[in-house]
Image 1 (cartoon, helix red, strand yellow):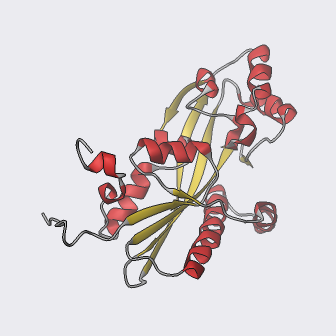
Image 2: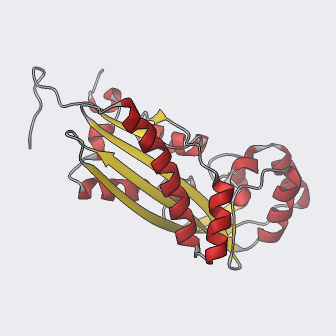
Length: 230
């Protein structure tokens, strides 16, 4: 096992989260990473329209959206200049697949209520596309794109609970019109698959990807997680 001396410290590693999602930020912070948050400027509607015209499958749709987000943020970072350490950009996009149809964020109370009345008591797949880009010292760039599917088993909330949940505002900006970690947890009976992917970002997938590039996830942990008593 290699060691790093105080005189020759390892260059700083950083994660850049190409998302404004509070859930994705929470997943990374809970896992010991304090990312730089850089929401991308991407015309998602235009991309979705083009993909619909192509008849793209669910996995392709979320991967293309994730790739567009990653490209926007990676391009902005490149214009800022090279970093001495390793920079990993993570971009994701999630959509719910049920009855062969994809749905993203509901945005309105009315649409949230409509979706919940349709999906309660049923199973659906939350499909999350990941686009991961690592810029290594010297400028070498590695990229990977993959989708993760997790089955969500919806409970059967009452009409009153559905309206109250929608009016809370919590699910309006969430793919599938639900959260797992907050109020929505009352209404999810179970999941089959990766729990973190239901929150919008798969830690196991990211770990496997970085390991394939010779990178350890612990090198991206914040100092408190790496240094006892710090």
